[in-house]
Length: 272
Image (cartoon, rainbow, N blue to C red; front, top):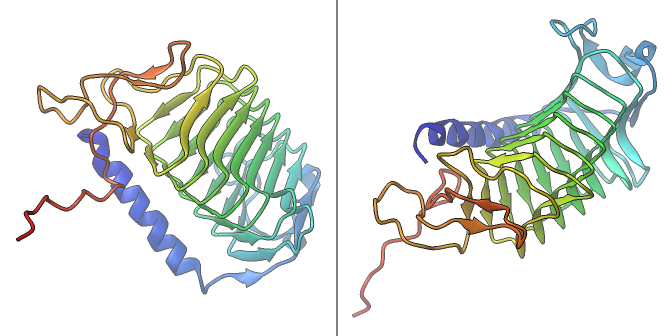
């Protein structure tokens, strides 16, 4: 990877740095439930903002142990812009963050560990999930009927499925590290025209599955697929053969030989 490599590497390092910095800085907070625009209050963890695109509500720096209640943060049927930032949630029986019929939300630099699902979007669009860590959840992210969202530069480790989309179209999955999961990306129920580019798929049982046509490269570069090898005759860092995603023709036409989020193997040596 050439031009985009520095961006993805820098973003990944920022995720780790911000997660480490956040680890002792948050304050405990009970679960948050917001079901209309008037419930963005201090009692519901809103620290600042007025709910406009230029001045969104900010929910940040909280540690929420859901204690096996259904949700850590549930926001439904709102029209205002908001950001969930530097929040750590564990122990949610359904979803750490559940957004339903929501637009213009951002979830940034959060840690979701030990939940049934890390983040769920239901009938929600124009939202962004970026720079978060998803670890030891059943599923990292689940979308239902949610289109035109972004999943950017997140880290997924040891989830059953990292990203699962049902009936969700035109989403962007860019620059994520997806490792040690059973399934990396699962696209189901007519989920199509999603763009999956610049991601690193490492040590998953099944890197990707799709029922419908999606986009796996940008015409120049695709994704890194652990275990895939071909020939790089022109030595441009792109395998010369496509990586097949489905038997129906979905494929990554420009699979990456290396990725900035994946350490290079040690050089071969001769045992004496």
